[in-house]
Image (cartoon, rainbow, N blue to C red; front, side, top):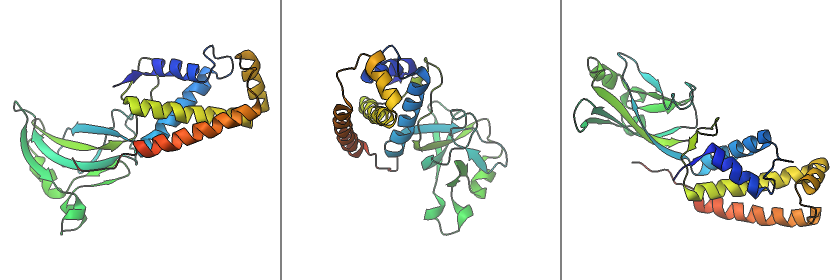
Length: 226
C-alpha cells in the first residue's frame, strides 16, 4: 500500500480535529508528518532494493543517492550485495559478495558500509572493469523513509505503518497543545473544540501514549538477510 503526501496531510488534519487548519498550520502539519516518518523509520524502516551502476576502479558507492538527493545517509543498513548481468533477459546472477565480517582477509575481503556508502573489496572492483555497461551491483537493505516535499509525492508505507504514524502525530500534537496555553486556547475556540478541557486533553494524551507504545512494539521490524 502507498499514499500521497497530500492525502496523508488531509487525514492528519482531520485526526487533529482541525481540518480547516485554524490552529495547526500547513507548516506544523508538515513538521509533524516528517517527524513521525523519521521516528517510525527507526523501528520499521523501508525495505529497498537498488541496482548500482559500476564505475571503473571505483570502490565506494552512495546507497540510494538518487532518492536522498545525492546525500549519504548513515542510517541505511545493507543486508546483501550481489553482482548481476542486467544485459541478459532475465538478469543473470554472477556472484554474491560476502560482508567483510564473514571473511578472514580483513576489511578489503568483503563489502562494508560506512556513513551510508557501500565499499566493495578490491577483487570485486577489478572484476567489474570492462563490464560497466552490462553488470550491476544489486543491493538489498533497510532505509529511512524518504521525506516527501510535494503533495503528489507517494509515500510507500503499509496500512500498519500509516496507523502508527497517525498515533505518533496525535501524541506529538497533544504535547504541543499542552506545552502552549495560547495554542490550546486557539485550538479550543477556532477549531471548535470548546468542550475539551486541559484535564480532558491530558486523558487523551495518556490514551495516545499507550496506543503508540503498543503499536510501536507490534511494528518493530527485525532486520534479517534477504
